[in-house]
Image (cartoon, rainbow, N blue to C red; front, side, top):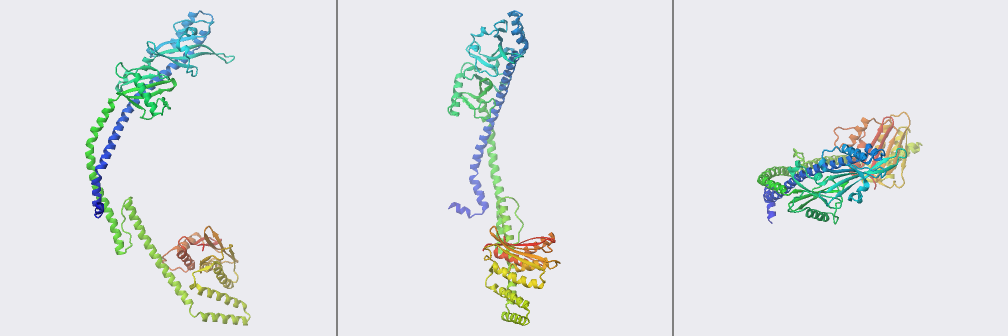
Amino acid sequence: MRLRKLYEHPIFIQLVVFTVLIGIVPLILISGFVFYKMADMAREEVMDSHEQVILQYTDGVEEKLRQYQESVIQIANNTIILKTLQQEDSDAYTRGRRVSEEVVKSLLLERKTEINSCMVYSTLAQNPIYGQRASMLKEAAREGWFQKKNATQDGWYLYFATGQQENLMAIVKTIQNIDVNSYRTEDIGIVKLDLNIARLFAPAKQEKNTSFQLILCDSANDILYSSLSDGGVNAEQILSAVDEQNTKTNGGQTEKTEVSTRRKKYDDVTAVSSYLVQERRIQDYGLRLLFLFENNEMSQKRGEVIRWILPWILVLLIVIVLGAFVYTRNFSARVERLLQKFRYAAETGDLTVQEPILGTDEIAALDRQFSQLLKQLDRLIQKNYIQRLENKETELKNLQLQINPHFLYNTLETMSSIAAVNQVFLICDMCSKLGEIFRYSLGSSDSEFVTVSQELHHTENYVFIQKIRYGNQFEVYYSVDDGLDKKLIPRFILQPIVENAIVHGMERMTTQGTLEISVTQKEENLLIKIEDDGVGMDQEQLQELCRYIDALDIKEKKKRSIGVRNVHQRIKMICGEQYGIRIRSEVYRGSVFEIYLPMR
């Protein structure tokens, strides 16, 4: 009931009331949304900074490992080392010294503190070798890396030595000799580079602006390195919490299905104690890295968002109220203007289109549609008025033709009798055809529709008289598809078109012309085609004729083709706007008049 009473007021009052009532709701929603977005942006900012640190760190570690791997490959492919291992003209210690010197030269590394040792082991028992960085492979048979060779990849593999004083990472590659004659390869030794994991993976000092802790695990999930200090949460607890979270996230799988050193989403963060833990993997080396960032940075960002957003809530409230008032006033003014147009047209009956309401919204669209409606109504009124005038004119002519019908019939009979007595049978035939034409014309008041055969018979009578008039200057051919002769069509639509073709198309021809009348079915329509091979029309004449027969209002009287226009307008009025006459013509090629009618 209260809403109904509200609808009794002007739309301006309604909009103002609704704006005030619901203003607080969008304000709360917008404030909550803005806070959420700002908090999310702050979170993304923190996560982006973490990501930059992670990317910088992982890129640096991968680059180090790549350089160490290339150094090992360089040592394995060193030609001096290959020759020295196979030499038999020197003693074992001399060979060992040469190999050791080449190993030092090949490394050329700036981070020597990360290297624990680098050894070349020979498998050639006939050429023993001993030195600071060279030995026989049998000497390493008791070491763990030799007993657990795995993860072989392109002739090299990794080994992690744990449980010692310092955990080590070994890059091991086979030394192969290629026989230039047989192109066969032979394993003649192994290169092993031991790296100190703690020194290799320790976070650099320049990354302290966004400090983090690191936990490093191998593919078996064994902890190789942790930068966490003693006290507080330990590495095993964090690793267990992350694995538990991964199990829930991945539906029971303890490992993530996608492994990448590049983070694509922020939902891979696990909160453990006071840390935000992000996981990355270096797939090529089977390493798992857990980055631990302090959680207090996120809390500080949230506090900044809250302090920033509160003053804007009041500003937003003022803007909403003022903006709603101004917009409501302008909106209601445009609606009132549209209503004034409706009232003016309804009360005065004036269909003149007034100045439009500017804009592209629904009100402007309604105004355009209303203006279009006024134009359409005015056009239909003009059209119906003209058509009624033409119908009245036709009825008047038909009434004039019905004056003294018996007198005209008797006159034709008298003329036919006189012609028969004088044996002028052509006049008898002409009187007979003219009588049939007269009776067909007088029957127009009985029905507006006739069959195709009746209309064609009337046209044949007319053509018979015209051929006598023009001395057989043309021939007419008829073609009707099966089943179409009984279809109903409006009366008097063929004779005016045939007359136009004879008078304007073939009257000026010096040779015999041809006129073809065909009745066919085209899709769901009945098509009557009148085609002649007369003088035709150029494009300018054709366009002028088409405009003339389509025009509702004729500015000036035209004596040419008035019959064609009347037929076209009658068909559109009786059958619909989509039906009527279509014309094609070419100069000295003739013209084609196509009459489209509905199937009846």
